[in-house]
Amino acid sequence: MAETAASAPPRVRNAESRAALAMLIALTAIAPISIDMFLPSMPDMAEEFGTSEGAVSLAVTLFLFAFAGSQLVYGPASDRWGRRPVLLAGLGLYIAGGLVALFSVSVETLVAGRVLQGMGGGAGPSIASAIIIDVYRRDRALKAMAAMTSVTALAPMLAPILGGFLHDVASWRAVFVTLVSVGALLMAGYLALIPETNEQRDPHALRAGRMLGNYRVLWTTPIFAAHAVLMGLLFSGQLVFISSSSFVFVDDLGLSEQLYGLSFGLMAAGIMVGANVSRRLVGNWTPRRIVMTAVTAGGIGSSTMAAMALAGLEGVLFILIPMIVVAGAMGMSGPAARATALTPFPQMAGLASAVMGFSQIGMASAYSIGYNSLLEPGPVTMTCAIAAASVSALAVAAAVGGRGAHA
Image (tube, one colour):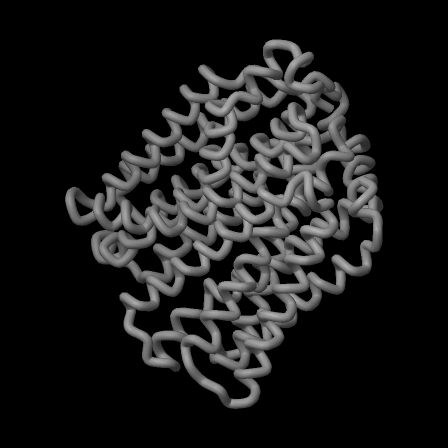
């Protein structure tokens, strides 16, 4: 655990600087930037390669799976060898994948490059969170993670705009030139600003027995398991909205594509507002109180939304306004939940951070796939699926009891 800023060694003070925190936030935003900047170019890429849009969409879904799975490698590897060499290796792989995609002449090569990008990009958020646990105490870690949440919510709003501009001015290859440049800038900035922060390296962290033992410790520790499941459930509701809302708002409720884009941006704004509220409450409220307040608001908002849909009240605002509340609840609870779950494990911060990130994406992906496989997107099915996830998150938060306040 980090010492106070006044007594901490120079390397820790350097890692706590504002410039270093900005770099950690940028590393966390690598996933939404890499996914959303690419979206406006997909139709033209399908036409150029003479393939279906479904084939090109694999460049998104397989990127996400590679991104999530690679975190389970980077986390324990950084516990073994240190944060610095592992993160640099990941960014190098991210750059290499971007170059493969940039010079691709077939959809197969494009997808291969995106998989490499995903495998490399997973180092960013998993190791950035571990660095925060290395150098910050819990309340200050919560503030730093709230800042991360704000930026990662902003990235999906801005990345498609920039990607569309690059596509219109040059071509889809300009998007990958930008992503390769982003990777290089992140590597240079990390080398310049952040020293090695892992002072408790575990030489056995990558051994199968030690890894299985560490997984068992994490998932049998109620405070970690509860908050990891809680975050997975909250993100499950968000992913259902992301995957279904265009069909519901545009096809079922008659919203224009332009206004749909604005409504989607309001969700990101809700997450940002929630994260900033969480940051301002640190020191006045316990993390448990922040989480309980947020998930209670999300449960009420989502239940109200589903009840209105079941009652036959159809309209964009009947979904949009409660969803802003639900998004705000995710932004408010996320930093407190992550800080509470991760700070008890400084000796395996890399693994704990990776497992939390992977479980959140994995649980939400499974939930969204199940929803889309079993149900037809519509106002009732979408709102009920979101409400089920949000209310389940509230139940998990309540079940953890007072443990969250005494981590």
